[in-house]
Image (cartoon, rainbow, N blue to C red; front, side, top):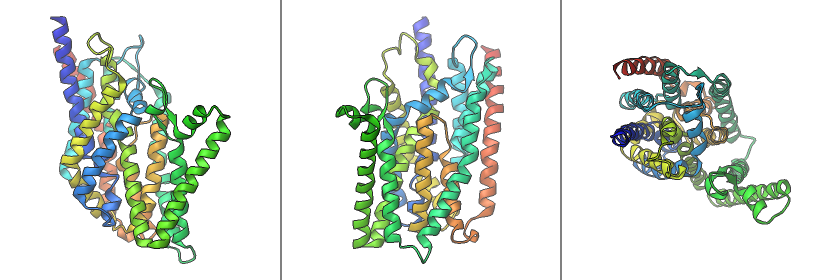
Length: 399
């Protein structure tokens, strides 16, 4: 009887997690990565939704562990080292998913990281847990820095690409080299034994049993030369095609990064529930695959509406400004994955779109839309916290 009760509870919690994953796939992780590419007419809305689903699934499985752990056990400190109960996890997931779903159907990009973080903290404090102040400082620092770093870097990149004294045939390959350097040093689960992670550069150093730092530097340099060389050749043959190809690659990389970051928002509340006899044998990759499938379905079924909203409503983007928007988006996303910090992809990409659009004149950015979006972000954080806190107290009183 006890085993049956536990199984039913896990099924309900898993369904809530899957619903959350769907809303994330339909919203932030599904809509934001290819929005600049769609705005630049480099890819259609439906194709963007298809590819972002596949790449998001891959990112969830290969890079989703860090953020999942933070959301599951890093936001609340429990006196006896426990975690969220099944009821708390269900309340948090349903509250956050409902708010994100409202954003999807109204056309406003609700910040998923804000809603999930607020909901998890709300139920955790209602359970009697203590706030994890140090982790909150890290999260808030990244959230506050994102508009300045993302928007600032996007502005600078767009300005360089548009300036008459700079040759985009050289700037674009340099940006490709930067992307290559990052790719050589981001960490993946499959490159290290067990649940550990390692970058391509570190894995090569370990494989050849060479001094680690010099070997990693050499691998990074090769990645820079490879990325820059490919783009230089592409830009030399046809600058317009080279920009379009680079833009699509960047969209794919941001989609992959979105899966690695956003899947933890759906799966994190489930982590404390997996320490049971029924679930002890499930590997973390299996859990990440479960969440990644939810992202995939959400991207295929719900993302096109939000892709259109971001691509057409926030700024009129061309290939240059789209490239400028995706470069900082990729960097911020990978930094968040590395440090295990839940981050809003809507905040990242919207800040970058505004920054790149400002390089051509702020008049091309809808200020009214941006103002409503920022209010929606802040409101979703506070509303998720209040709703989940109150809902858990009500459910706990009934049970």
